[in-house]
Length: 394
Ligand code: PMP
Image 1 (cartoon, helix red, strand yellow):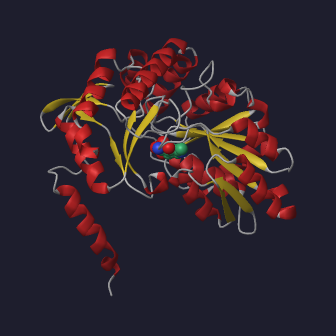
Image 2 (image 1 turned 60 degrees about the vertical axis):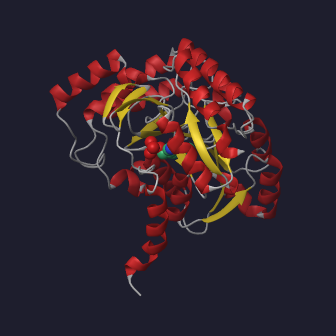
């Protein structure tokens, strides 16, 4: 027995994947032309799986802010927030995020993944209980592991099941941390947030909402599902990422609880990693007001989402349950999904290939995400590529 033995099944899986002539989980993007186009394998390809919902990665103000920060502050902070890595920009962004959510305070983390690790492992420990939606992102599962708390999963988007599980916990439910997402990353469905809040009111548990895929996408000012549902004051912690609608990298948590600040001392994923570099913070700060005021971007984003969802639905593909900015085509086998992914690339369209367990319900996904920067013509090209590949699922 060797430590390497566990890789043997992965190795054969990988060989099958590479048989299509590409590594679908590591295809290099050779040159990026815009938020929606890049060169892959020497060809101009439409990017339809980037989570670049508002298309801000090439926004002129964000680029300018990032260039200026590099020139003035250098390429990196070379330290954690706890040591030499807290620059004025980190603090300013925290203040701006708190204002954006009209909450008491916010903390910035190096990635969205780390934001979840930090919040969950900072708030809970062995002996506590965390109740999560079964379709939660891996970073939420990993945060639970790091905390050592007991984990109870409730059926995806099922408030009744949440209630049942909380009731079964007895007194412990009053101390539980409930975690859900705004829009779920794989199928693009929204959480039944109002129903979940009604259930939660019966207990004195705390609620975390991860708005990674809904920031900038939902709500009048882009706060996410909490804004769309009008429940800002009924959520304890909002978590999110800069790596999607804000077009950079990093994570945050905002809250009205003064205890949020203790995560700066109690959370290993905050203390023991380097802070985001100045250019990242600067472009994120430039992007935030654009996101907040970006009603026109959200309008275009949702027009595109509707057009793609309805186009693929008319082609009889099995899709997620609602029109969303994530449009996932569900397929039964890995072979089908792989052939599809490859076929789309040949048609000049890049999407995400997702296998179980990352995809829910044992399905394989060819997952698209829509951007406000996609033109009508690009959306039509994506639909036409799916139309051409229909025979792969018949
Ligand atoms: N939460 C959710 C729901 C996500 O989908 C993701 C990333 N896809 C993250 C957190 C992690 O964010 P990041 O990529 O910024 O680390």
